[in-house]
Image (cartoon, rainbow, N blue to C red; front, side, top):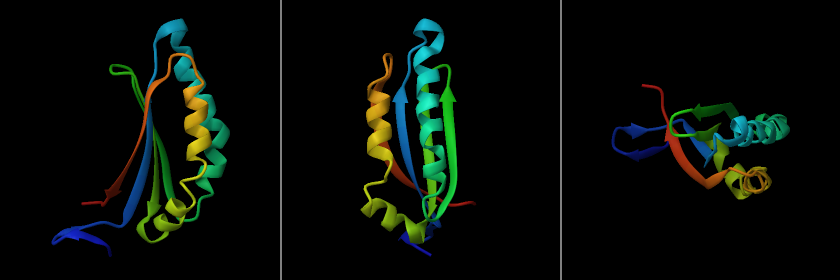
Length: 112
């Protein structure tokens, strides 16, 4: 099992895609972001080693996040493939009126 430092092991690596959405026009940007996710969801779930895909929405701070979690031993291959379909998904988000602050982050997960 991979270890970051003594006692800090992990079995899962996750990639997060996140942005801010606007409540303008009856949350139209949130609806469009969800549609963009729906359009790639099957492809994301088919990534070798995919353990889960989670969507997080905060109505208070207007966050829209997608977390793709992979087995630690298969994550490197996805990273080598530039996290496909990340580039096209983030581009699609960037084309949506009301979407801002598009970011990514990689982190580890471990059940305690």
